[in-house]
Length: 336
Ligand code: EPU
Image (cartoon, rainbow, N blue to C red; front, side):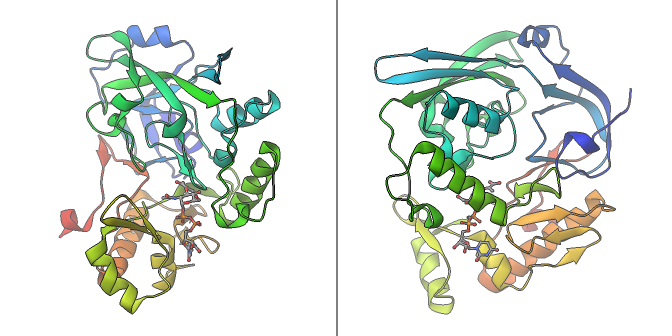
């Protein structure tokens, strides 16, 4: 039965899928057929359906949080369908700190490891002990250690070797009892001996000042990844654009701010149909409505072309795009 996808992804393009299934108990996965095309979804805050999807959308909606106190830390096990921000606030209420920099990130617990969510100097990978998943090929439940997840900036094994092969069912987090606040990011630096709650409030205030609430103004968060370039490529760029924000990324590389590149290319407020480069944060695209997947592809291509021409940098979209049959990647190499 055709099912509207508009309320199921926060970018809210108008589209439909052939079938829709909600998983409220992981055991359902063992009887679910994965032979026909399928797409796994949490709250749809990092996935955009460009067109009608000719397959089954499987939404993970399992609930449950379990906390075990250990000698030096708390082991927090949360079901994939739990809302991420609610987990952050629930843990703070229990005086378990660590996630406050990641407050207000939209989406579910199960989606968090896939792209290794991160903000304000913290990435979720540093707290993950293990990830449980349903292995589609063997029809069995399995588990991966942190190391086996191959976490990197907005990356994990779930976007590569296990793509379309694993359904994350539960995530086990390890939160040390000794709390070490991470206050390196601009607006957090002003806090002096803050409580976890105060850090959380500052993060919420900072996010609210730049990032639109996806349930009020449709968007999918940062649209592009911050590009990682070699030090050799950075030198001529800095000579021409001394203000370009850049951060060391391992030996030999730097991460540069895609939002700055887009803003300085004059694209803030640029519009195609109802899609606009957000006025407060150029890395975010918002959808005012009456827009299609083709409008979005035109916008992506325009931004990528403009940034390439001005800085010789290829922007890669961070958001997962789904066309009629599959996930797709919009890149200049492909369209050239
Ligand atoms: N900047 C501009 N103009 C803009 C946007 C940014 O000049 O329009 C500059 C800022 O002034 C700053 C730098 O670019 O010097 C970085 O900007 P910001 O701190 O806002 O963060 P970001 O790099 O744009 C990343 C994450 C966000 C996360 C923030 C805070 C990615 C793709 N995005 O954005 O994550 O909240 O850092 O840590 O890494 C998300 O993934 O959906 C997301 C919102």
